[in-house]
Image (cartoon, rainbow, N blue to C red; front, side, top):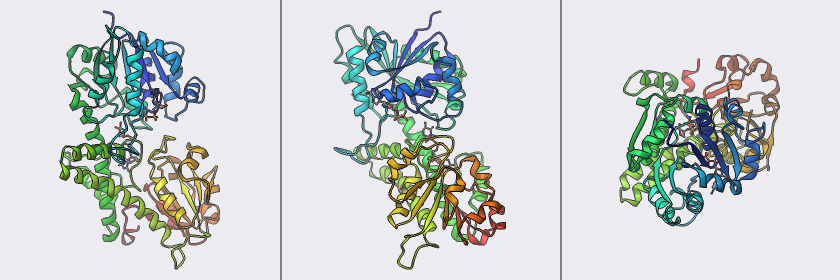
Length: 459
Ligand code: UDX
Ligand code: ADP
């Protein structure tokens, strides 16, 4: 039987749209997949050997499908593809609003609305419109009302198919997801989309719910994950003052099958484009329905994360600041700028807050990352007092203090016996990810402060 969906368009060639469409095209060679974006430079990069995002395994998937049934096009060329599409995914950014009603909390749906207008203007016949970007609950109403402006005979179904991939493991998450969620109002379009995923995802993992439950489930999944990180980070502070070891505590707590071991790694704080944005969106929605206690509960997850980042920066400053608290003439090596390993994404990375706090006190920073470009670093923290180092060694040379902010595997293998000589005497390594070789550091005469490990517990 011919599949109901033969031609797909995805609007938005970002961290979600690009990898997701590449995997669909790879797994379904008979389905024609077009990814369009208004950012022409991004499209050019998707069509080159230098893909615009770094994601392990992505290049191989793209190279298998691109030129066969996967193409990346600009907005102008995209219109005809939308006209011919059976299904159009909306996978654009939904950042936190910076002005107007809900500023600082609500998700900004202007890009989504502009996609809906584009679809309404170009679609023909019947089209399934699929929310892939994380949306506030009932966003589909806004999309529907815009789509209603389409010409006569043009009809739509709306589905919510939120993406659960995590950056750095996107390809693995897409190829073997815990679940695929499809929310909708009628069984036919849900089945049509489910049929695509069932080509490689076991049927029992393709879940369907109502539209509003699907929209809300994505926000809630991210809120629960972020809450786990804030929970363990709150305990990290308690471990530091009591002499307990947060890794031991997490491992004991995680053996309870009702709790589970994942997402209990204490850190400098969570980052990424989703957690804070989705928490704020959940808080805003709760407030707008008058649920102030619910909003306050989730707000604390955000506040704890902010506190953890500041606490970490202040711990770096404390041993090297002047009596007045200044960090002038102090050089601090920043190892890692991405919000987690295996990505070049710096959106909401904890490094931004840590670096800004140190810069504000006059420090000079030498920042190293394996994948983040100097331009990305400059766009977040400027260039004043910031030097971008091309190797960990270059960052560490002459440093008064060291902050490990991203858990790149290579930082776990640094040879501290050799590096001790290039650091200033008495320099302390502040490990925001608990990955460095603690024994080697101590043996080399360097100081070490690990997240959630009290001084009394130092081994
Ligand atoms: C997250 C969700 O995991 C994913 O399902 C959703 O689709 C998008 O948002 P992502 O932000 O890409 O994915 O990465 P994730 O692995 O969830 O990490 C988020 C942040 O939490 C990172 O800064 C990470 O370092 C931090 N983290 C994660 C911890 O500090 N400790 C942990 O135990 C886990
Ligand atoms: P995500 O992490 O959700 O994928 P990104 O910011 O990486 O978010 O990607 C979103 C992409 O959507 C960007 O490349 C942006 O240029 C694109 N985009 C935003 N609005 C539109 C639009 N109206 N039409 C086409 N592309 C859009």
